[in-house]
Amino acid sequence: MVAKVRPYFRHKGINVNDIEKMTNFYCGLLGFVVSDRGVASFGSRIVFLTQDEEEHHQLVLVDGRPRRIEFNSINQVSCKLGSLQDLKTFAEELRSRWFLDYESVDHGNAWSVYFSDPEENVVECYVDTPFYTPQPCREPLDLKKSEEEILDTTEMMCRKRKGFMTRSEWISSMKHKLSIKKK
Image 1 (cartoon, one colour):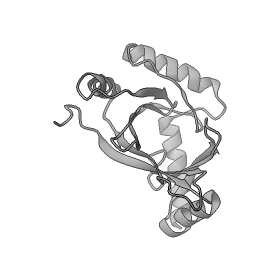
Image 2: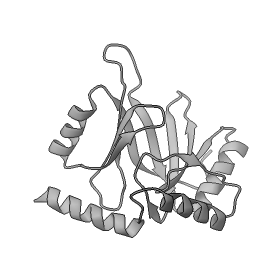
Image 3: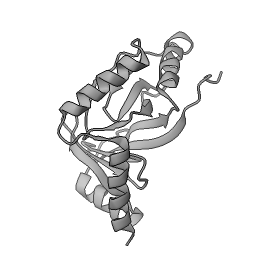
Image 4: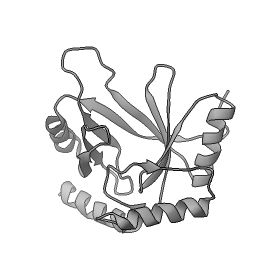
């Protein structure tokens, strides 16, 4: 059984022991740049990395991985959808066809649904918004609202946060950051 709305893979999150060492490794060796960093809602430090000026993050590093015990190092596997309507359709399909519970979240720069795979790994399906706000940002998202209501709610929330810009302004700033990295 294949979902009618097909998301495509976009980014991955990894729980790490030493967040600074891992950040330096991915930035130094693979050319990622830090697009955001902060403290997640659950208290761990979080760093967002990208190699693409149009992607807020392609790799997410989250501290807190135990050093000497077995632990799933996968924080999340994420797939991007084409539109807010696709996200709404996909979320409905999760419950009605796949019988999976999900959590819907407004990150300001993305609208997301989170659910678990059969081994309890977190899976995220998301769509970009036309806005940027510093991450992490996690607000409730009501997918039963109209697309216009969701867009208005997100914009209002983002504009209240320090560092707001449009997605196109954020992309320009990342192009500049990445051009410096390539030199």
